[in-house]
Length: 197
Image (cartoon, rainbow, N blue to C red; front, side):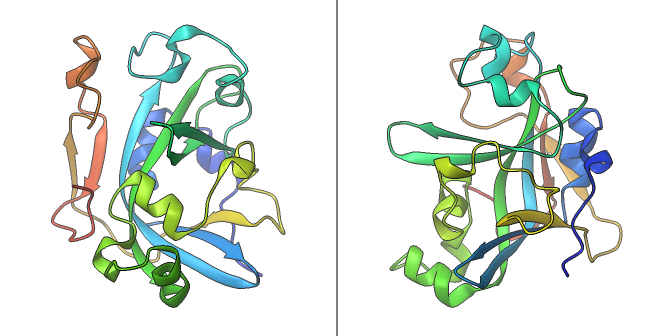
């Protein structure tokens, strides 16, 4: 049986969880095959006051997942073409989530190659929309419980020692007003070759 991270792992302040997820292994079981990668880049989105967070508009049919228990997937469609994967953080009732921005592919690379034709392994998961295509994560995974045994998607503990972590402002939120645009809530494994571009 895989070692699945427990719910208490996710019931943390969002910035802390965004750091803790670095080095962990995101796993998607697809047709009996494990597609997995090491999480190397994350971003924190924290509550209704954060104007870059979807929850800044309050609780809606789209954002209700963010108000639920931690350790659940918040998957949404953007630009009319991309699915993005987030992990709900903090305590139930407080809307916050961590966007998984990039993975270092580890397992199921042949399948990832078929899902990302014409791309090299370096490019498979080098961005939040790319990694959902490589792992075949879609809208049906919105609300999926990462802590449930037998789930088709989960996260396993990091198998590495201490990491060199770098903090920067979040990416792709140029229309968000300050101070939220410049909050240093993007976390990366410093120098990793699989970071998004």
